[in-house]
Image (tube, rainbow, N blue to C red; front, side, top):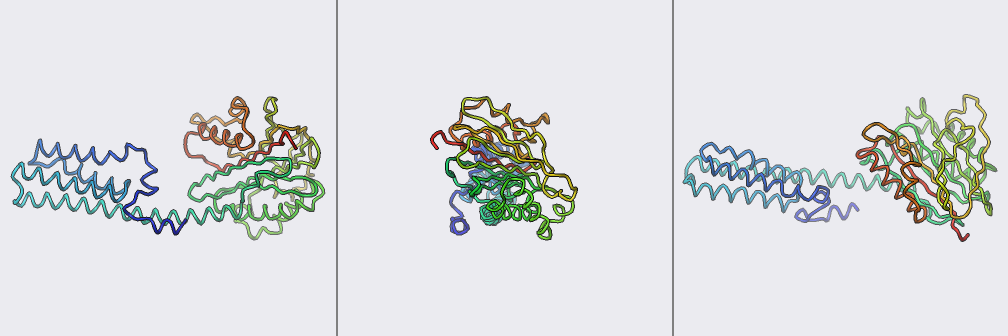
Length: 374
């Protein structure tokens, strides 16, 4: 990705020009037209000159170099035509007017080059962040045994691409085990806790005889590796987590809630419902309080059903009126869905529609479907 960015010609349209609505491309030309008309109607005062300068700078900030050069050339050509018409060409006032216009055009080119240079730097940073995200939080396999899987991650800090939510899926002798978790904090400060948690899960998922033992193993790993965590996470933080187990050959799913939002069960022609734990446990990282961890709970999971796991970036997403998003109200009427990927896509789109702008928290979504033909 970095090599492609460096090799792109500065004259070619790039991602920066494609991120704005199409009408933005015409804004500098409207300013040029307005400025030239104003100068033509009142050439002595040149009240339209600020519009011409604004057109050059606006093009430099928003458009490609080709567009900037075209806007600058149109500015200079327009001033020359007006100078010939009003007889100022060859006079001191005419030369000053032309010099100001050329200076504005060059200023637009300079602004364009500065923005483009920092844009390339940002693309390099984003490519590194994306590689880090894939290393820390790889995509789960699309199929694991009798299960189909889909996942999506959206960081609140969009330029960072990585944050404090995490998910993982591991096939073990005890069945397929799944983790979804939410680390206190956002962005890079929470990445250390995420890496410790996921590393411990991948290791302990194969050894722990049940979900309670697995949760205890994650707790011990977090305590053991606390020196690697950000100070906020280490001293004040905790990690909400939901552990799920799909036993081999069974029609049930087991869950263990560690202070995390409960999963949702949908599909199979049945109404969508949330599987709330009868006794939600404390989040990971709070084991020093001495509270006993609850036993895992078992739920029916027949063929064709989908288990949807989310973080509080979904359940605590707010609309303009401050109302929280409820997946059962937003997602329930949208079914039926085309497998787990359809569920994830529909939920993410509905949350984005509900929020209508930037989100305040990271969002992770994981959907697991038991296929009709095992």
